[in-house]
Amino acid sequence: MTLTVIDRADAFHKALEAERQAGRSVGLVPTMGYLHAGHTSLMRRAAAECDVGAATSFVNPLQFAPTEDLAAYPRDPEGDRAKAAAAGVDIFFAPPIDEMFPEPPRTAVTVAGLSEILEGKSRPSHFAGVATVVTKLFALAGPCRAYFGEKDYQQLAVIRRLVQDLSLPVEVVGCPTVRDTDGLALSSRNAYLTAAERAVAPALYRALSAGRRLIEEDHETDPAAVRAAMHTMITAEPLMTLDYTEVVNAADLAPLSTISGEVRLLIAVRLGRARLIDNMGAAT
Ligand code: AMP
Image: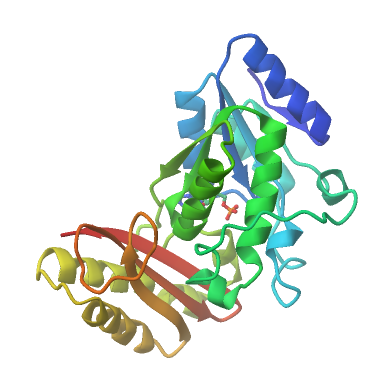
C-alpha cells in the first residue's frame, strides 16, 4: 500500500473505519512532525504489529504555553511524508489547525496527579493540552493500538491513565527511546542546539546512566543520593541549566522514600534555546 495523505478529520476517521470494517487492525502513531528515527521506530513497529499503519502530524497549540516555541517549532512536511512512507505508514493524517480546532475548544481532558509533577511544574498547562488532543485523535482514529515513546515518559503515563479512566478502545504501547551514538535521545528540539551545545548534550544520558549504575551495581537505595549524583553531573556543565533530577516509581511516578523495585530516573535541563528531557529505567 502506498502512503495516503489526509488533511481532513472526517476523511481520516472514515479511512480507518473502512480498514476495520474490512477486518484489518489499526496501529496509530501521533506525532508533531519533523520526523526522526525515534518517530520512525514507532511507525515501523505499528506497521509490523498491525495490518494498517496510521501516523498523525500535528503541532498541537494546546500543549504550548504562550512563552514557548510553538511558532519556532521545526517543520518539514515533505520530508515527513517520505520518512513515514519509508517506515511503512499507510495513512498519514496532517491536518491544519482549523481542521482540528475550528473553534478554540471549551473542553479539556486533565489527568490529575500525573500532570502537575515533574514536567508539569515547569509547564502547568502542557499535559492538559496533550491529553485533550490525544483524546481527540483517539476519537477520530477509533479502536486501535497506539504507539508512544518512553522518551516522553510522563506523557506516556498520562496517556495510559486517560485511556484507563475513560475506557477508550485503545491499547497503548510504550516503545524504547532511540538515541544518537553518543547517547543523546533523538528529539525534534535538538535542531535548536548550536554545535557547542550539541557537544555537551549527552551529559543527560551520562547522568542517567550513572544514576542507574548507582542503583543496580552499588545498590544505593536512597533516592536523594541518586538525585544528588545526577545533579552534580549536570551542574558541572556550564552551558546547562538544571530544571530537575528525579527518581520515581516507574508505574505511577510517585515519589520514593526508598528505592525498591522498578524505578524511573528523569532529568530536564535548559540548554541554549532548547529544553531537553530524558529518562531511564532502573530496577533493584
Ligand atoms: P513528538 O513529535 O515529539 O510529539 O513525538 C511523537 C512521539 O514520538 C511521542 O510518542 C514521543 O515519545 C516519540 N518519540 C520522540 N522522540 C523519541 C525517541 N528519541 N525515541 C522514541 N520515541 C520518541
